[in-house]
Length: 312
Image (cartoon, rainbow, N blue to C red):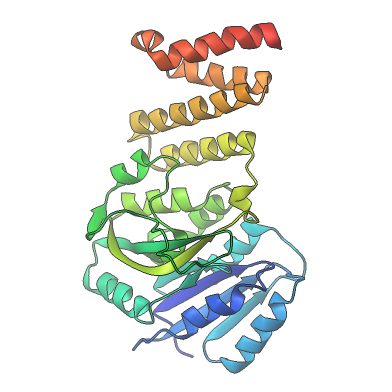
C-alpha cells in the first residue's frame, strides 16, 4: 500500500448490531486514488471485534486495525485513531453511522483537490431515531437545499447547535496540528472546536445531498443527558476556542457562553439543583450589562435566583 490520499477513520465500541453496515458503506466506495480505512476499537466485548478481524482479513490492502488491549475511553481511542492517519484528507465516522453513496469519497475529495482554499467539506445526512428505519422519508440533519459555504462566524454563532454531522465531514489533515488534535480529544464535544478551527483557517463547503446516515438512539451517549456535564463541556469548548482564536471573536463567543449558562440555569432550577443554578447565575452576571437588567430573560432568572435563596 502506498501513501493514501484519504484516511477513513472509524471509531467503534460495542457496535455489533451496526458495524457491518458502517464497514460496507466504506468498502463499497468507488475511487481512483489510494485510500485506507483505519478502525479503532476500544476493547469491544459484544462481538464487534470478531467482525473487524474478519473484514481486515478480507481487505488486507485497505484496512488497518487499532485494537485497544483494554478500554481506554472514547477520548484516547479517538486520539490514537486520528493521529495514526497518513492521508492528506481525513473522513470520519462512528461505528453506528454509515454512508449511503458509493461515490461520496470521490465527489468530496475531488472538490477539495480542486479548491485549495477550503479546509473541509460536509453534506446533509439522514437521521435515524431509536435504531429503526421506517419506510417513511427519514428526516434530514440540515434543511439547506442548496450548496453553501460556512464561515467562522456561522460556526461560532451556531453555538450548541452543530450544523455538521460528523459522519459527513472530510477535512485537510494539515489544517489541524497533532498538538491541537490532542487538546481537542480532551474536550467533551470534540467536533465543535475541530470544525470552528477548520472554518477559521479556510472555507467549508456544504452539499445538500444526504450521503450518510447519522444514528441517534436512546442508547447513545447523547441520550444520557447530564446538565452539569453539558454546561461544563460547552464552557470548556468555547474557552478553548477563544484562546485558539486569540480572542479575535471574544464578544461572539461570550454571547454563546452566556446562552449556555442561561439554558443550564433554567434546567437546574426545574430540577431543584439550586446550588448549580446559583453558580450558573453568577456566571451570567459576568456577561450582563445594565440594559440587560430590564430584559424578560434576566428578570425571570433574577426571580428564580431569589426563590433559590429561599428554597436552598
